[in-house]
Image (cartoon, rainbow, N blue to C red; front, side):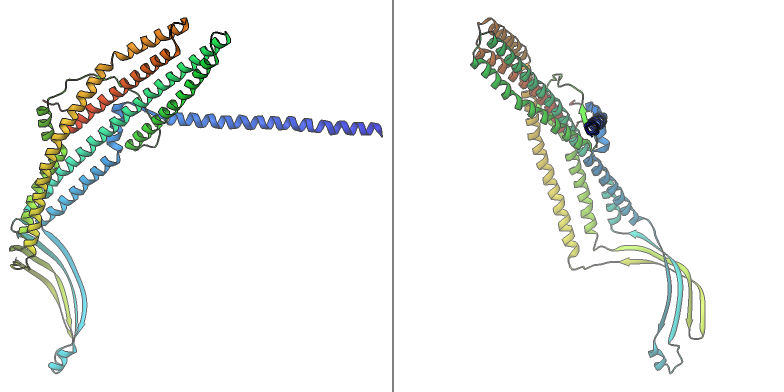
Length: 460
């Protein structure tokens, strides 16, 4: 009995060990499979990230941006309007068919039953209508539709230039955020090195708790900036992806280094802007269209001539009588609505008011462009001067920090002087990076103000 009990205990003891080994092996397989899935997802996500240069981003935006696509659709709408207006000058053909039965018993009563009261009619006819004279209405409508094409072209230019500006700004914002993140990361790494140095000095007995605590606080204060700048990178990338209308994540490859260009004079810039701004050109075309619309409205109560005709076959059954054969008609018709209750006069007044409103908008936009031109030139000058002023500051700040750190190691500098040098270097790098970004954006905005962004036109 004892031996059986021992054997039973052994079996009972061995079973959990085997089960546990099996569970460990299954757990290992599960963890390995999960890790493989995670790694595969990370690799797939990394493969979906598309790195773009500025030229590539602008090329994608030109074909996929929603505003540009909408402007292209407006061009197609204008094309349809032109076809619609041109049709008024072309002959109109219609096919008319008829199968009808009518009965009028009053005729039988009047004629004593001699006239049949039931009548069946069947006919088919091709009709022609051609406008001959419309008091200039048709011609004005066609000319207005033709000018609509140029309006659509200018609207497409507006969308393309605005999109190019927005894409360029988003591109430079990503580069700026990356630079700011790198600066924040370097600042954190540097403060972590200071903490390590303070801890070593404390272990060696040449530093106090205050030194290590101050270094630790500096490290923790530097972390939020790293988090903020990393989030700025994500936001800027999402903004660029929105402008490009793409589903995959995007990244950029480029630099904020800029070639300093001479700033054009105000008069030269304004002359180019008034010549090439698509908004001004669109208003000019709309003003010409409004002139044609006044002519169209003025022709509403004027006489017009039309040629109308028809040719076909007709069958008529009246009582016991039957007849069928060819039928045709032709004539010149005059229409003269000499009094329409002052409706035409009201339309003319509205059209003339629209024309004057467009002229006012043109003058207002011209004044606004003058102000935009001054602001754009001043912004470029300001950004360029800041870049020049800060170009040598970073090198000086780096030398100052190196000297402060070396002096602190030798005991001739205090931590406050090192922190001041670090702060100066951080500010110098950040200011220079932002100044370069601002200069590039100012150049892009100046080209947009002149109306030549992406069109390869110079000030001259």
